[in-house]
Image 1 (tube, rainbow, N blue to C red):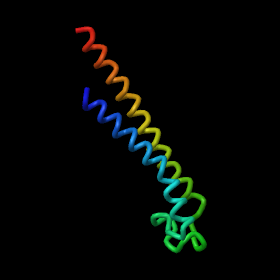
Image 2 (image 1 turned 45 degrees about the vertical axis):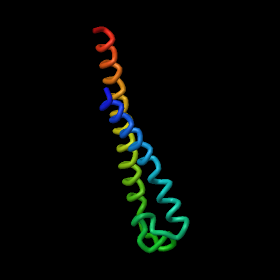
Image 3 (image 1 turned 30 degrees about the vertical axis):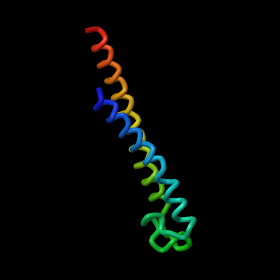
Length: 88
């Protein structure tokens, strides 16, 4: 049961980290940074096409959905293990 709780905690932290990535990139770009490598020459000389932003958004959304689905599965599994332990 401890391992299921730990797994849920790790997955929730991963989902929060994935959701925070766009904010971190925007903050870095607004302070004159490279957006963690997204725009190597800064925002004023950023030559990324529209497809790159959609691709990054897709990967982030997919990662977030996978994390949320795994949290849900782990929570259901934890619930079933608790039910089985109560029945004994």
